[in-house]
Amino acid sequence: MTTTFSIRFKQCLKEKNIKQAELARFTNITPSSISDWSKGKYTPKRDKLIILAEYLSVNPDWLVGDSDTMDIENPKEKLFNTEDFSDDVSKLPILGTICAGDGVYIEEEYDEHIFIDQGMRADFALRVKGDSMIEAGIFDGDLVFIRQQSSVRNGKIAAVRLTEWNEASLKKIFVKNDNVILYPCNPDYEPIVTRNVEIIGECVGVYREL
Image (cartoon, rainbow, N blue to C red):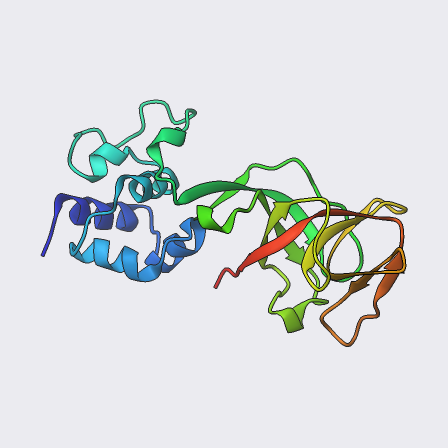
């Protein structure tokens, strides 16, 4: 079965040399959905259509056959506004890199985003550098989704700032006798015991680019 969308979608992927797996990674849309759309089994809903069109840099109305103009009229403008998305999709900024090893700075200037399920209730994403959290399933290069908050329950994984050195780190948090213990999830690393720490937010999800 073919549809206008499936024909134009496959045409666009071919012309731009984009693989379905790559599209799935960068849009956070499941590979099965992309495959079904490509085969003409379904047509994406408006929120997903906008996400696809933004990544492919094409007119979303062209993809579904409502326009003969493939190119975006003004590529410097965003293809969407918040009304284009359903309530279950959020556009999350990737703020920079956080350490899962030795502390590093968080870069708060960003130009990358990732789309996630709004039910995750995250405020921003950070890219992990290091291997101190591998036993928690968090690896070097992963994206962690952070919900901004000033405190977390004991045993939760959080992004923190070590205020004495102005360094940021991702660790499991325990508070005991006014001390904050930052536990790595890798036996090669030692816990950090400190009072000079600011909690940036709780880790509420992980995304790995395959």
